[in-house]
Length: 259
Image (tube, rainbow, N blue to C red; front, side, top):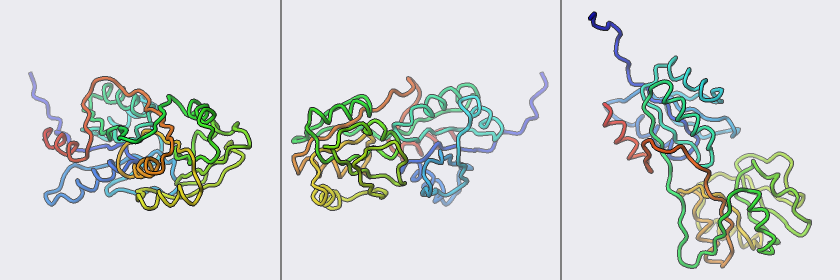
């Protein structure tokens, strides 16, 4: 048998990013004194001015799992890390299919879900539509809506008796609730800041997605202190099997174990 003359691939890591964990992972790799793999971070492009990580950055979709698999092959990617938002379910399933098709090792970097503490008054729901329905039973009048700028149409049909404070990085686009004020801000948020938001806007219900992590968790503590109910949208399903870690440090250890 004639030995292969193909040169071994130099390490090239693709991070599907857009989260704090993805940025911290890219920063940790960039800070290594002995160098590391070539790192490309892919961002979906849904935020107008994203916080860019070090290394190469591409913005925009791949065209489904087949397009991502083609990109992995064309750019000789040797490892893929899915560090997308817990609610970016489509890209996670696309990543699993693409990695299998292109024979590229895949790691999922997913922050743990939030768990209620003593004194929390959480109401779990399966979707934004269910969250909107839950507001009726809670007799919500002034709602702090922290689910981002997409999906606001689920709350657009609320009666005039409900007012919303919508916090997002970029301004939302219609359809959205008729009675609404927008608070443009980007985490991480402080506990004192969240207390002030609840007080200043006389909030009586908080609505959030189970994003996990520390950057946006202070609102949950502030709601607990104020005795407010919190409607929590549960996470969508993720691909079964595969390797999953919770922190950038664990992702680094996984990468080191492959070299």
